[in-house]
Image 1 (cartoon, rainbow, N blue to C red):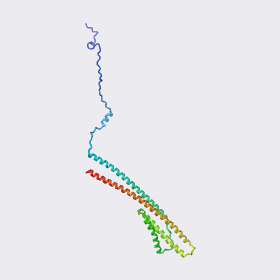
Image 2: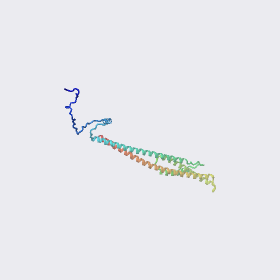
Image 3: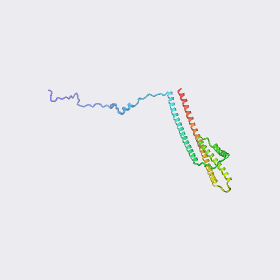
Image 4: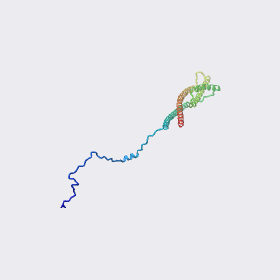
Length: 257
């Protein structure tokens, strides 16, 4: 008879009395878990797709070489243009300095007192001879002066003043001779002494004027030499620029063909 108080669900046939140990595998199972970060996603989106290698043809190489040559020639032309502009600025500065010096020399020459009017009149023959004698040194000065256009007007003024001073000196000498014959020997008059002082003063003024004219001639000659050198440099640079332009045009026409 079965005991109803000792009913239980454990079945010894199903569950062995001795626990059994399952065999453990030596190789662990590896599972790959994909991990995606935000920065890596953005980088993958921004990265361009790899492009296949391109082959450069001969026409492309020629076009690239022509572009490089154009850039180099443009750079050289700009350098030459800068040099020409700098030389032009130097020439303008030199011209300004020359004009300032000429103005100073003219200002100094204008301060010289002009000879005063003398008493009496001189005969026509004496006046003609004095003018002829006064023109001889002026002609010599004109032959010594170099061909400089800015100084021509100044030299004409200086030669005119020189002629007037020579004529005045000759007339004073004639009057002194006439008064000396009429007056007594050994008794010089006040007017005669005044004329002598005036002659000495005019002689000093003539020497000063000669020095100024010679200094102006030297300055003009130096400036002319400097201007010739600068003009030669400018012309050489212009020839170089024109030659480069012609070569550029000829090579461009050959490339288009």
